[in-house]
Figure 1 (cartoon, helix red, strand yellow):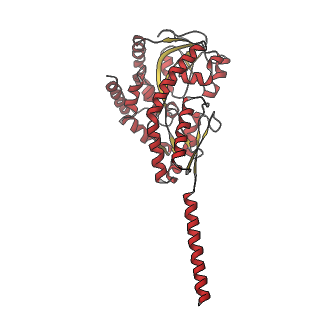
Figure 2: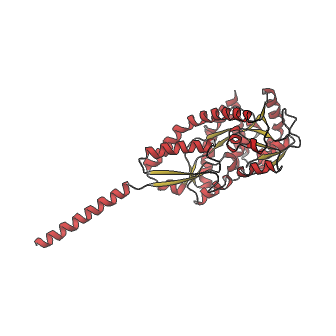
Figure 3: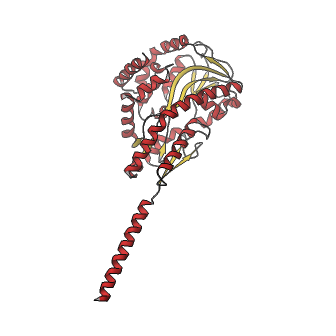
Length: 343
C-alpha cells in the first residue's frame, strides 16, 4: 500500500509539474508579426511604424514582437493587399491608392471633389462614417483586420525634371508618374498630361532614363529617395490628392492573438495616429525646405488656381466614378461629406 501511495503521489506530482510547465510555456509564448514596407528607412511611414512597434513591443512585456521589413525586401507595395489576403504576409500598411483595384470605393479619395482640399477635410470624411464603410468593405473583401484610423503620407503634388509647371495650363504634354488608382491618370489626362504607372522603387530609373518627365508624390517621398539626384528640379504644390496608409493584418493571424494583445495593438495604434499626423505635417514642411536646399524650385498653386483646377476636373467626375466602378450612391454621400467638412 505504501508503495502504491508513493507511486500515485509521484504521478500526481509529475502531472502538476507538467501542468505548471505547460502554463509557464503558454505565458512565455511570443507572437511574431512581420510587417512589409516598400519604402526606405528614412520614409515617414517606416519611421512611424517602427515607433509604434517599439511602443507595442515594450508594452507587451515580450509577448509580441513586430518585425519591420523595409525597401520592398518582402513585397512591393502593390502586392501587399494580395499577400495579406492570401496569408503570405502578416501585416502591411498599403496606401489608399493601392486598394482601389480591390475596393473601388477607395477611388473617391482621388476624385475632383477632394482636389486641393485641406487635410482636415480628409480627416473629417475618412475618420467618419465614410471611412468606416471603407473599413468594413476592406475587412470583408481582403480577409484582414484594420487596426484603426489611417496614417498620413501627406499631400501628393507634381514634381518635374525639366520643364516647370507654374499654372493650371502648364500640364500639357507632360509625362507624369502616378501610382495605383486610375483616378490619378484621369485627372492628369484631363489637364493635358500623360499619366505613366511606375512602382515606387523604379521611380529613380524612370526619371533618369526619361521614361517620365515628372512624378506625383509628396515632399517627404522626394527627400527619402533623394529624387533631386535623379533630376527633379521643380515642384508645383497643386495638392492632387491627400495620401494615407491603411494598417491591416491578416485575419487568421489576428484571430490567433490573445484578446489582451489585440486590445493592446488597437490602443497603441489609436494613441499613435494623432501624433503621427502632426509629425508627418512637420516632416513635409522640413522635406520641402530640404528639397529647396537641394536645388528644387517650388511654385505654390494659389487658392484661385486650386479652385480653377478643381472646377476644370469636375466634368470628368461622373465618368471616372463609372470607370472605376465606384458605387454612385457612395460617391454621392462622400461628396456631401466633403462639402460639409469644407464649410
